[in-house]
Length: 288
Image (cartoon, rainbow, N blue to C red; front, side):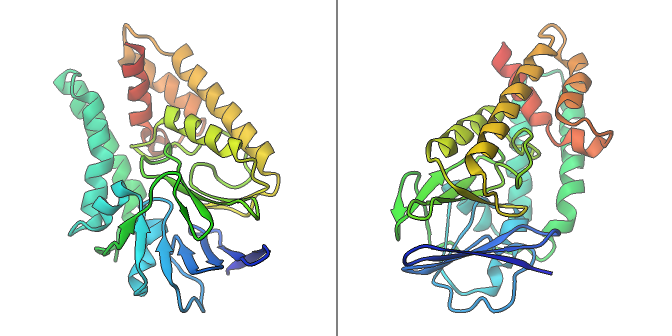
């Protein structure tokens, strides 16, 4: 069941369609009818769409674009993946290449172990999402700082390198993508192999500088105490970064990994812990 939240400006209506089992879908009705993140499922009655924008290229935010004939606009990195002959294979290569880049100077055994663990984790998380995900023709790209129909375009990397957000200054509403999840105050969403904790901190600081009143996240219900939540997520992400380095032993990073993964993922889920290997090994490189 879709839960619908509507927000009104002087000449704009913003509607968030939320359900617990998929990413949020957002419709902006102003100078143009802009649909954001038509993912695994789409609510009924979304007709006469002028443009489609996405917050990042993951299939739970893009898989239903194929049901529309509207022009699509993305981050330049997302365009390369979505226009590939096979987006699932292109995304897999994009995510896992970030791990291989980090482990290329490790011994062969350790590098192969980490790479295979990351690949196994990627399969676990992506398998239910990529079925039916096909090549998408992209009309154009959106640039950081650009204004389009009165909406400010923001690059918000961290969860993924191609993360984007959209800010409506008149309504003080920020569409944030997956950099944070709903009203939960915990560290930023760093659960992709390409996640980067320093980029996430940069993006949270950028979001905070806008002083939004409301955040419409990629997952979860609208966030009404927006500044408070951003400050809390930023605080917890900075705290996580401290944990990473406090438990990091530069003499033997291999033995440090389980300790660090517990800091990021207190759960006992092995798959959850494996999802952030790349973040961990970026920390190793930064420490050298």
